[in-house]
Length: 228
Image (tube, rainbow, N blue to C red; front, side):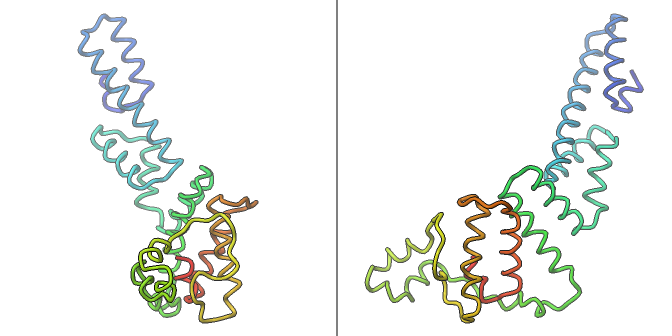
C-alpha cells in the first residue's frame, strides 16, 4: 500500500485495493486508495488526449496536477520534454501535424500561421528582408466607407455594413486595389485558396491551399491587406 501511494502506479494501486478488501481493512483506507486510483486514471486519460492534441495550456495544466499529486511516469515526462526541451520550431511542427491527424481545419490554419511565424522570426536576417515591418495598417470599416466613392450613392451605413461579406463563390477581380498589376491573378488565387481551405468548395488537398496563401502573404506585401 505504501509503495502504491508513493509510485502512483495504477497496477499497484489496484493490487493494494484488492489486498485491503481481502484483509478487511478499514473503509477510509480503501476509500483513500480508490480516490487516488480515480485521480491518477483520470489524469493519465487527460495526458493521452493532450499528447494527441498538443495544446500548450492543457499540457501545462496536466503537469501542474501531476506535480500536486507527486506523480511521475513516462507520459508525464514526455509532456515535460515537449514543453521545455524541444525547440520551439520543432514543437510547432509537431502541433501542426497533430492538427492534420485530427482533421481540424481551423486548428490547422491557426497552427500553420504560428509555425510560419516561428520560422520567419527564427531566420537570421533583418526584418526588412521579409518586409514584415512595411505592411500598412488595414482600414476600419468606417474609414473605408468614408473614402469610398459609392458612399455618396448608397449611403455611409450601407457601405460600412457591406465591408465584410461571406461568399462560397469565386471572385473575378481583387477586393482591394493592387498596385502591382502582375499580382492580380495571385490575388484571385488567394481568395480561391481561402474558400477551398475553409471547406466552402471541395479541394483534394486543402492544406496545400493554406500553405500557398501564407507563402503569398509572406513574399508579397501588396497582397497582405487583400488577404486580410
